[in-house]
Length: 164
Image: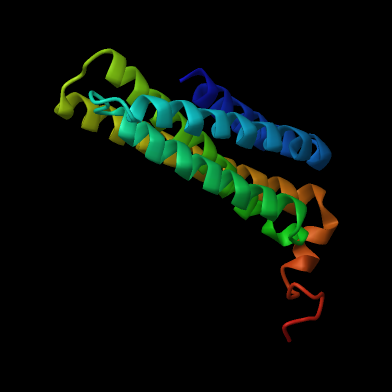
């Protein structure tokens, strides 16, 4: 649970760091994915027990967290600047899925009812999605104002050729 919580926090930090420094986000984001990997390992060990319950969901969310993190890294490191809003979206889903995995493990420990678990996990997802929308909007607006290459890159394809 701690690894998933750390992954969620590091992913959120990467989004906020990006607003001021792309290189800082490039340093923080891989650590979020590494923490998510530890979360996958921990959740898989718990999910293998006979009374796994919500731990199986935690394993699923941890795997989704790792996949989203790898996509965020790809968009941050290997894509043109116009893909930064996608970095924000995928990095936000790292935080959302990690929080959902940590919540599922917490619900496992507390022996929560299925109804309470469903409500809690849907609430975490809705709050995470709203935060992703706000972060993407903020990042795109900041990029338009502070990154001169962002507007120009939106008018070109990945090879730098113009669409028109």
